[in-house]
Image (tube, rainbow, N blue to C red; front, top):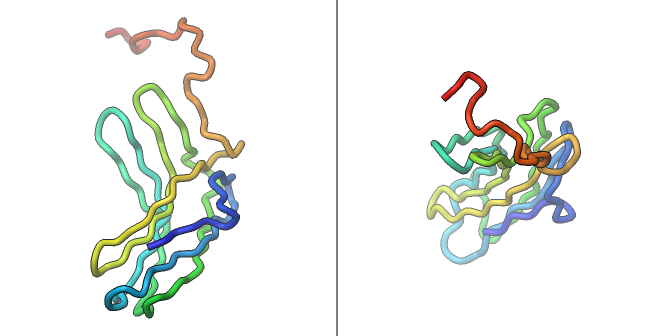
Length: 134
């Protein structure tokens, strides 16, 4: 399975539309369906959270086949960020229902089109513990 974004773009701003194409090869029988999902997830220390923002299902595609997809990104985040303990990553993924074949593209979503770095200005003087002690 192959997944692309329009112009191979990997950075988006609020309200923009993420467009691309998903395709699958001719080997084997065609899938019953292919699902394309827009989601974000956390990675780093602690539990991994995944939130599906939108999805579309392609029913009974032929093999080989390819289809365009489009998702309008939200106006208000949450935005891509990277911190010392956790990061928030946006992605689009396509998956066949029959054999689990999938493809995923991570991208940056923020007002600046760049990942927010929560410690960009850490000069070593940030507290090592919470402000309420501990």
